[in-house]
Image 1: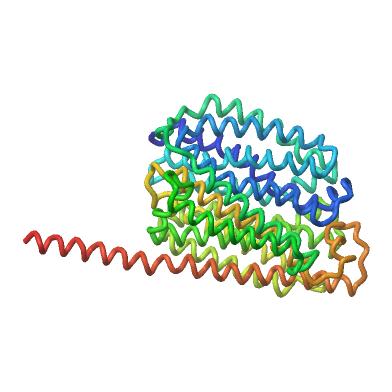
Image 2: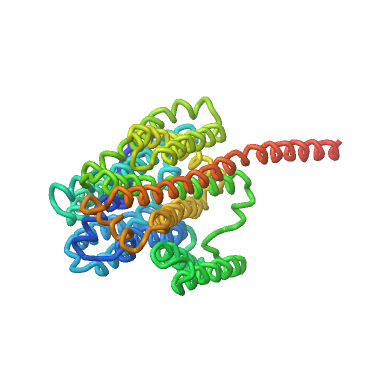
Length: 491
């Protein structure tokens, strides 16, 4: 398919689907205190409103990536959009927190169907020359939606009710369904006789579930609690079993041969580390302003807008910069910019610091992320066989979402880890929390620790992105040398 009207229409309609899914990744970030109050839930149950969605979306993206390669992408995309809309309507009627968590799992499954088919359809629809621009639009929509989520969520919660965090999805979903029926053309999958890797998928689910349970419990019970230890053991055993099963599977859910390409491997590692470092920043900032500055949900959402502004600014420039600089240069520079922003957050997150440095730090993190994601995604999608792009995108999305869910669990654990029990619940009380100045100092140190850990992870991401350059040179030299030897033998 060449770049014609239908290609750009496909980009727009799939971007609407991405908008819907990614908004729901973050609209609840700023509304957690309201939900905790409404359902009278503790820290663990409240955390799982977020974590359940992220966990199952992460695992099922990889599962559905494989399925879409086998059975075609259009129908699965439409199924995801329809089910997401219906489940969003039901979420608003949830009678208790555990019923809501179950609905969030179903919502996550629907979102995974949407996300896993979006990038491959765009990659198939555009030529290499314009693919960077198309993916840039897709990444921009995804990033802006995720970052605007707290603002929209805060406003809806403050003006209307928490139920509208879900009900606002319904009209958007209906528009997306009708639009997609007319725009997206049927795309055939591969041979349907190929078996699906059920065991590999289950081990991914068990392993990530164990890890997230361990992180979510460690903040309140400590690392020596039986639940935490059990979660870590389940994660380790599941990971080892996954590696063993995938090596013997007839149709593995992860084709490890793709990792023989050094650029592909380093780009995916950088994707995971960047997501692990950046994803929880919006949640942390939203909670920070509600607890430390006693702001309501709407104002707290406004304080995370600098990240959105940074992403928009970078995305507007990335098409121009992408024609003049390499993927390596843009990706690594973006991560360096994010690291500088993290430094500002670490040294300006105590109760007496100026908020201006927090805003500037967020702007730099957003700009750096915008600079990193588009070229890095392009690098991943163009280094694999087109027939495996569904699997490659599923893997990329899974690693990115895995970073999100671990980042959320890890950051919440770090913030509450050194707090006494009576202060841990006040993190989720938001503006309703009644704390003394000495307690505010203790709470702010928890946020400072979380930002410091995210900075350390960003530095690891910079190293991963940088390492792809050296091996690329070696591969080119080896290829040239090999061709030279062939010519000499021929002579």
